[in-house]
Image (cartoon, rainbow, N blue to C red; front, side, top):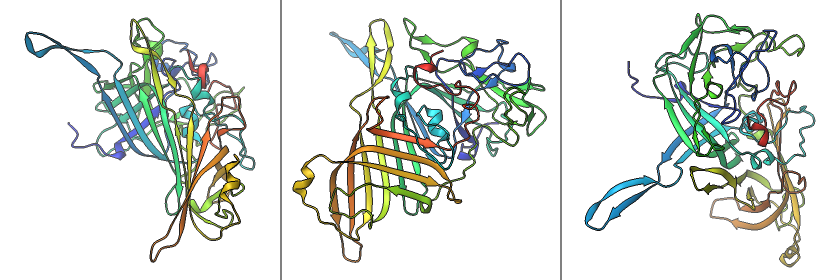
Length: 445
């Protein structure tokens, strides 16, 4: 029966560890659980016996996608209408989504260099975008839609379920905003090479699976499979991926209740893949460190109302003869990030603009805690330069000031300038092997 509508209840956004790499892991030789390396092909060569590497992204609030096919009309003297319209360059595929910031899990899945650490010491000396700078193929994103009236989480993935797959997706912008009265939110824009929909895939019901043990709503574990939406950019010319080793499958409705294996000693009891332990972080639990005031506003006494930054990662497609899709999507440099702080003015300090003509940098940080005052995620911005202060006041309003900083992102090995992220997400596979969602060139496989 046809759907009447699609609402947020019936959709979820998933991400794969790479575009052209394996989307399904093999089963270890002992038969006690999945292999941890996403780049390792299936041992059995069959989708049914593998473990899906696709992860559901947490706390998604909006999700939009689109595509545009760029064509050039072919005309000639003697005929008014065009005789053809040919594709001259890669189609433009776009995806943008927003989510509540929690513990860094989403950021890690998307390829930001963010590590899971202890709550008492959330610090990271690695440039956050180092993995994205070296990324040659991007990630695949999958938008699952199940039957009307059914939740994706714990659902049965019935035969009418559909999947929109977005291939070779590269992040072109990441922004963060925290303000009084609103839950801290991140927004992401993705540019991709290809998009496909699997609207007629018939799910495969599996009555058994080769560990870990499963619990599922319903009699069987149900999966949906399909070919990867990615384009093999390294082929000449570029081509679709049809190899079984690149196929994907979704079986989100399972909970890990067993262990990866006796040797690993890691137990998944009560842990559901892709589910954060944090429901949402409150603005009242945010700690800001803004360094030395470089302008007239005395930041230590000001009442901060909002803190936001936008990280632009616009990309250029490198073309070559014989390849319609291009062979790379590289980040445009230099990368200049804007940071904006809005506050209610309290006190001013002695300051002369002439003195500010000498370049002075600030290190800014924002730490988001949970309701128990435990650190969950930290953004650290180094070598920020004050660009402007704007004061405003109206009848009946408090005087406010908007401060704008600029930050130029350094290279992967630059720990003095740029954006650095740390989080407390459940880093369960990173503790076993470095194969969990490899970063940068490590994703090629």
